[in-house]
Image (cartoon, rainbow, N blue to C red; front, side, top):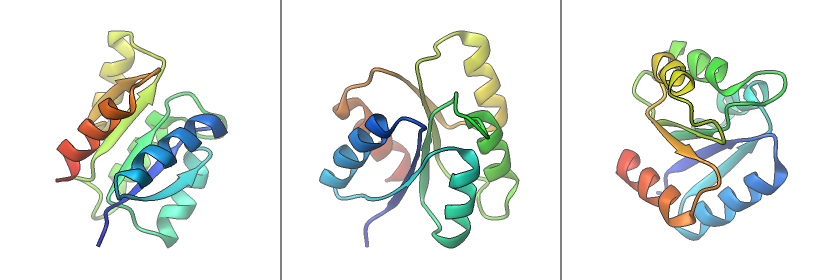
Length: 121
């Protein structure tokens, strides 16, 4: 059974790249356009990992991480931030919220897969 990864990004182009990369590597992908959409979909379709953007409308990535971490059973779920932000204080905020890792955009598909494989396997 393949692992299910949720990708959360308000950019359809980024979601498409994530889907193609992860699907080609054998992962089942669930897409969400923001944090609210992600939480709604996770309630119906449990996932093994979340890859989320930071800056999104309606609910940003840090707020999403806090909500996911507050739910029973999600304390140790891998959650990786995928964002253009690289300042240390923003990374620290993500880490305090419960982010497992950080990938700065633009990213290489191999870089994404290396991180996913490391935290999921």
